[in-house]
Image (cartoon, rainbow, N blue to C red; front, side, top):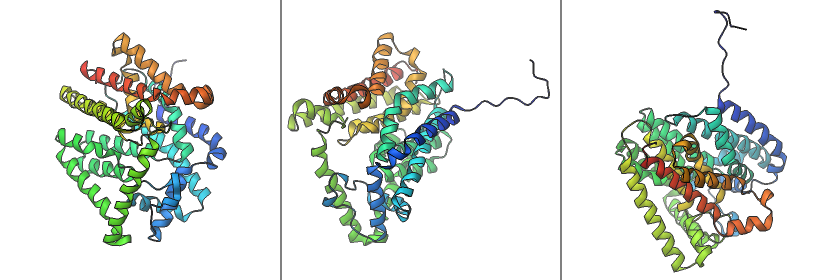
Length: 385
């Protein structure tokens, strides 16, 4: 039946809203089980309680669940420590679901030259990243929040709001220090205002805990933070869930000078490749999307403590690859498609204990991530993104 002229137009439901509803329902089904876990959120909750009483944040007796974040992060989560742990977990859990949806929605909105329907892009990205989203929620982690701040920062850049971009990117560093990787990037791209605001606010975030702990107390906190990271890094290299390039070589050759040298050489080669790709970028709108996606995806590979669930930072990269998939050479389509499928399906419950342990022990996830980085590079070389 044809619509009459005065009939109101039908509104299409946005892919982000569909994703939000689907993830909310799916997440709620597992909420009772997840509430029994979320060990990383308990670390945040304890740190928030400690900062309110100006107590030490970094303690050896915490064992594997030591606080490894900047001192200011404890102040950020302190309001949640005023609530009972279970209530705080529920708020964090649903907030994290909303953050994942926001990450998908803003990645979609920033995507240049959209070539396939948005609901297909969102669905394919969710399927590819679902394993990592689920692990993030199960642990009560904050990588999605950090990644969301990064894509919001780039959204501000694209809308000509450089000061706000610097503020949001600095917030990403407050959550986890990894996004400092964007400081040299902004300098290379001549985004001087954003760079200046970003750098100034990062420095300020390092100094602010002195309001509670005093200048000397804050200095000791920062020293303890560095010491905690350095002491835990070596032990974590052989953890099967570590997907960093450092861990890959440590598994293959043992922890030592050879593995460290090979990892450093690989990272230097990747850095040189990134510089070349930046030079290949044109001035047309949207070129920064690929660069943002590339650097975000590099974070868990570059950090010696890069865990598999941190690969949810590849959300913009996967969305871009799905969007431009037909533009890749046939061989690259086959290889990158296999890599995405392997990452998505490498689930403990599907593979079983032995197969999963063997899969992770050879750093197969790391290799798949490197393949996707190669596919992103191919898109830039072909001027597709």
